Length: 486
Image (cartoon, rainbow, N blue to C red; front, side, top):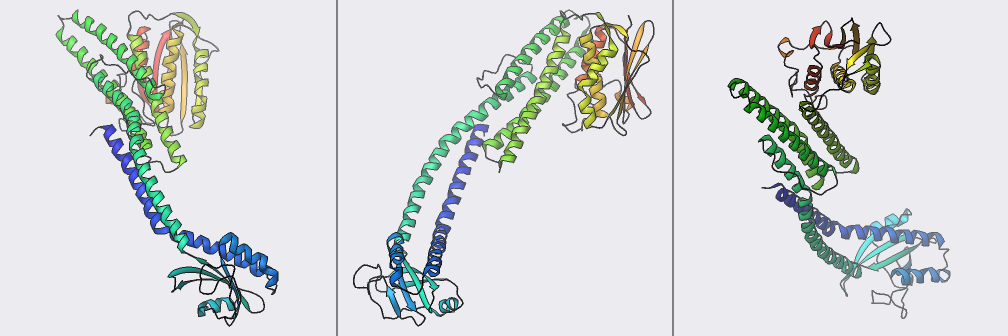
């Protein structure tokens, strides 16, 4: 089943379940809710009447008429014995009226209602007119002079309105389901098609097929990812072509060609794996947003933040792959100039001061001179120091310290970057310079790296004919390299 089909089914099911659930609630609870609302409303009217009533019925005609005209209520005032003193009801007619009003007759008040009235409470009870087979809601409230007020309303019109509301809801529900079908289909296409295209492109790259490209027009993160995948595919295609041409010239050395091919396949496989991992996370959280999984705005914001973080990681990986491709170009010579390496290290250190402060890492730059002039490409050497310092910050443990030490003689300046923490297993020391290699592959993605930083360091230092290495020391690990002193 395709992603778009799954999204379509899930969204449709969500719409149907929500619509049916709301319908069940409407049919089961709406009548009770409306009756409860009316009880509260009419009880408040009775309470206000009891506060304004002074025992003179003639002076209350205006208020009684407003109950009858505005709210359609029948009003009865009786004494505690149930003898009617005043009523707006025509005798024998439950709908009230202006002529033939009757009084001096008895009205039935249930015993439990009388008890509540005796303690000053307002009571609600229901009665049935047997002649007209109509049910009525009655609100009884105590008045002064041991009199009682009864407000009566017929429930037939109210229930007719409830039936109309239910029918109206059913029509709206059918329209909502139909609209949900259309919208879910459009949303599933909008979300799933670009993600599926990106997945297919990543899969083709893993199979060394660079002929397919992303053709989306969306001006968003997915569109940007598609353009970056197109760019990396083109760069890899060019790099592969150059490597293939080079291998053809070395047919006499079959083993060397075989090893080179194996390295290329491993690089491509690792690159594809690293590309697909954040894409899968983006696809998963995007699907969650489509399916309405976030239950509130805060949770939805978390989904958006995860997609943004995974996009940033993917862009970082693509940038490093592009950097490797640039370093592999034959027409990309390094630009050798004289520069002060101490100032360069200070500039790099300033960029990472915030990270070191957040992790409470103590930084020390150890040198016996104010400046040391060396010969090299300052941009590339800055990349080397930045990668080594980032690596040291990432793996600093224990007392959390990072030390950069400079040692100079007439020919070479040695740069040492030390961080406290666990030693690297001896069998791993020679492998950490390889592409996509990590000492601890079980490390969480939040802390783990792409595995390309030290690989880029090795390439740059080889371009400078520099020696470099790594060694375990007591309490930590030290990376070092040398560069020509001017």
